[in-house]
Length: 292
Image (tube, one colour):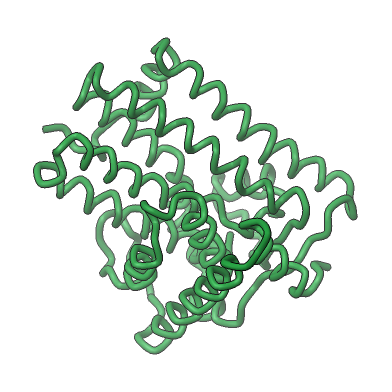
């Protein structure tokens, strides 16, 4: 059986773009990405003051070393879920088309959902201006770094592994594909770690994204799943493509996990009485210092 990791991203994109059954979902996805992420962010960057910007760093971010070697894993957050789409199409053929279309549609919906926060309050973190590789040059050139809470990277990878698992379960294949499901979850964790290692996000952004995903689809990402996600951060030894690294020590790791979990719970509790799911995040941003 072909592994998810062996699926070709370019070939999958070609399949998606040429499959009539996927055209609607693909068109909606690209519209959401360009209007709710790129256009909104670039407009705000060109017009300072248009949307308030908060600084959302946390002191514990300093316990995670800056490591440029993680950039390749960081940039895999979109190819990651595209490979899953390719695996579904290869494994289930025609039966997999409807699942793939829904998968793509919900990825676009994540951008629409996150924009409910971004359109009213942007956020940023301190990141080193490292230009030691072409990948970082591209990041600094094209990413205004104004959409940190909630982290779409974390939202996307959580959706990727949880939706993959739900589809496989619906197909009755969970036991047969347990290795692939475990690998997908581990890679989602690795990508989440990577954005902390290259300083694209704060641990606060991770908690906010987890809360956003519980609101987006509570059956797939309930608090119990969120707890497992937090417990897995920085817990896996350097493998599965992770660069060898000086990781936070045991005490630092425990403190990071506790802060993420506490903040997630704070958002969830506030969300129970809020008039809209995004209100706890907007309140947090209003309480945070303004970016300078």
